[in-house]
Image 1: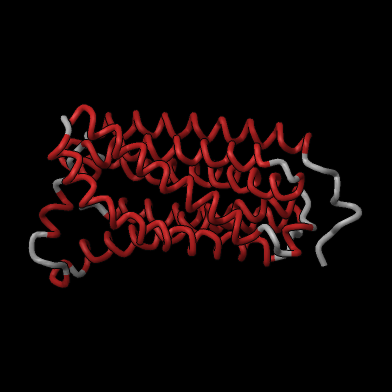
Image 2: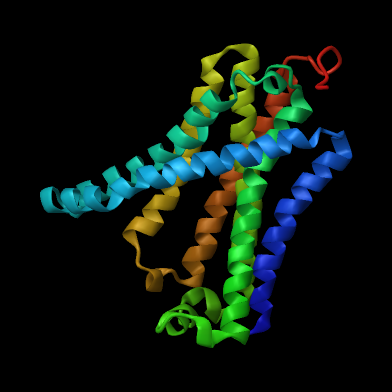
Length: 261
């Protein structure tokens, strides 16, 4: 394996940190909003992980009771709904009564969303970087068969693949930011429609991801397929960016009167 694959982890970590520091430098948003976003992600993903323990028995039951053509879509939607429930509805409940959120303005809402998305990019980047470092410099510590299974994956057959997870993480940060701003928009305006928009958006994103990870085996992920998938996530991110542009015009103009302390 080429050391060039170290770039995936490095750039993912850099993307996560870059978004945080850029927004902090540009707007001087208090670090607490990024921290609250990070904490929201940790709690949401932890609870979603517990709920996801239901997937294997559900998958077994559905495949035993239904045809694959019916069972697979149910699993895709179920997986997407877990994300919508825990990363939107649960997060809403966790932050809706916090004074810093109730008094937040546009910049603070974006900071919260960036924190939520960036921590995921940073942690996945650390995981990727650690994995490649072990493969390159300490393969003897890996469990038996792990090295062989990883190095034959399509991802490692093309040096251009190093950019795939980076593009995905950058896209996902925009997706998380849009969803996070929608949640805070719902809290600030007391309009549940924004919350449900966030829920549907996140559910769609992870339903698409589930189509791949539930239906396909690792060896089926060709470079062409992976790039095609990234195009879909880039389009979803562009939809999120467009949504952010529109929301900024509608967001209550509380910045001057209600700057966080």
